[in-house]
Image (tube, rainbow, N blue to C red; front, side, top):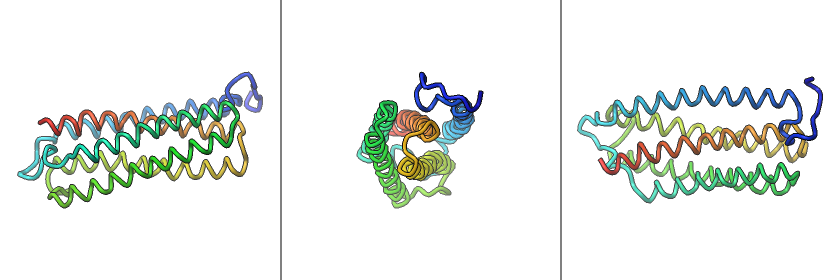
Length: 201
């Protein structure tokens, strides 16, 4: 029944409605996979159409790439630690790791904005070529998702501070962690098939 609480399960799964919400979010992530698959496919089709403008080998820099990869991979790890603390019913530990996760996310966004500025100074704007259009769209869409995630995370922290750990706030926190891990997986594909491949071609 919807109102029944099963205390033998992790906090975020104890209520039937929360279980359904988590299942619904997995379905939403399936739609997000379709979105990013389309963006990757478009990028792969247009990657060589530089129209005489800069290519990936001209634009991509190892320093910014490694900093951003470190920040996002670490934030995925700290998000996992936050869930571990949540399941141990440690609100302070949950909040600590959650805040660290968001700070790392903000660091990622800061470096990405700096990198976009570098691209523009090197002659690559979104309208420069089909390649730069596809590149900015893919990276910008991922960056917009990270921005949304940071804002979403702040709202969850506010709810945790106000209401404490309940099945509902635990469910919201867990769903956020799924979203954040998904963004990390997308970045691994960007790291491998956009940046690394672009650097060696």
